Length: 87
Image 1 (cartoon, rainbow, N blue to C red):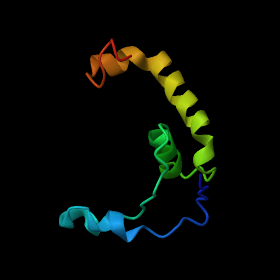
Image 2 (cartoon, rainbow, N blue to C red):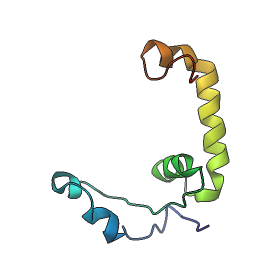
Image 3 (cartoon, one colour):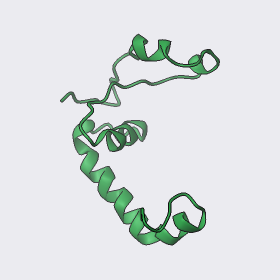
């Protein structure tokens, strides 16, 4: 598993940018090739939040998201962002 530092991010992999629709290519500033290990959403969020801790700290992001859902779950259901069963 590779580690990513926000102070020295890797250059955007051109293979990903080429696959994007032409009308958004100029707006892409960051692309990260994240390991597909079941925690990729948390790793991507961590990278986008610029915490600079690398992919290994997805557990912290995962716990923070769970805390938010536990605290504000009804709001997500009321806004139809997720249903009660998912929550």
